[in-house]
Image 1 (cartoon, rainbow, N blue to C red):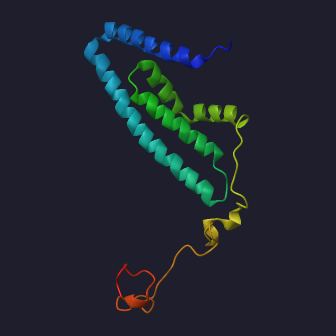
Image 2: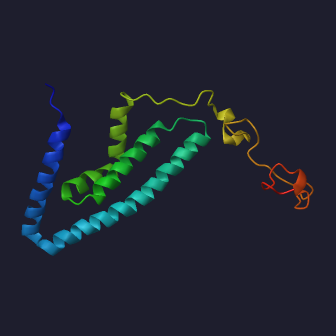
Length: 168
């Protein structure tokens, strides 16, 4: 029978967190320990917001250039996991969460995963079919419809395909 690490971690991590709480609480007191837990949760949410928006921006830039954002997507998942770890009360999970916010640690994780994960791009996705060429990827049509004042009026609703049901 193969040993699964998940049930072991579900038991070991909470026990290790409780032991760490007891050791830290005996050294600095109960209220400073609770304060540290709150400070790490707030710092984690701030870091998650800042770095999360940065990853989303880099994903958009890579997609606009016609590339496949494999590295950025993995970084985004790691930042999400870091945020969850920092919001979880405990010093061990906070340490792991803060480590995942360090780009060098995420790059090491990406280099480990890159050999084991295949990232597929969109078919025919080249830089020439990206938004920079003025065409949408879905239908090949223009991205913006610009109406002149002659194209739009409110009085000719009878012949409009966009009229309300029952309106004639």
